[in-house]
Amino acid sequence: MRTHLIIIAAVLALGGCGGGASVSQNQCIASDWQTLGYRDGINGVNSSQLLAHQDACVKHGIIPDREGYMFGWREGIREYCQPYNAFNVGERGVRYDNICPNDMQADFIAAYKDGRALFKARAEVNRLQNLIARNESRREQVKAELLVAMAEQLNPVITTQERVASLARMQRLNEEQRRIRRDLPHLRYELQLKTGELESLNRLLALATY
Figure (cartoon, rainbow, N blue to C red):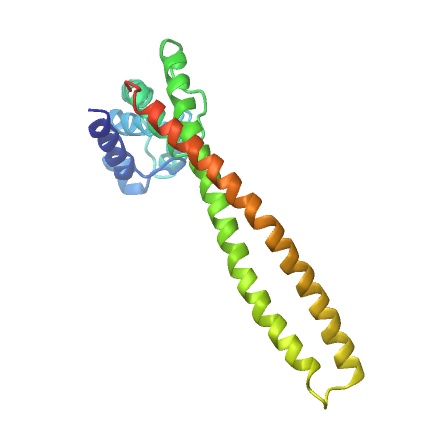
């Protein structure tokens, strides 16, 4: 049920014009303001978005139906503020703007924090994986650059200035190589820890009843 409801919410979100977007002239003319308010609400858009709609439509001589918009928005926001959606919002790393009604706020925030914790845990694992991959790739590049620098030292026709520059480059590359060799085991150990934490969190949140 939770997955089904999340998919419905996602489809509604994609069907709208997105957070912060307003309406075109044709939308102003044809708009069902109650439906528009519902769409904004279920997407977690603050009801102050009506002001943006109003600014857009007034240019075309059209005044929004505030009462209809707010009726729809209040219905939509109560859908948005369901705990299952709160978890989904947090898991996607979306910021929460404290727009839920008071009677739904506590449950929303609790579920949102769980989703946000999962988002952060995944992001940290991804960060470490990417950092390790970059270091491993750079390690291979350094090896290749060192071979080039060593070959330069064996070249009898290079000038003294070029030889000195090549030696300095070899020194920098050797220092970088030592740093990478030193850092990689620590990064791999940290990744192992963070992966374990993510797996534990996944198991724990699998028991949630959102």
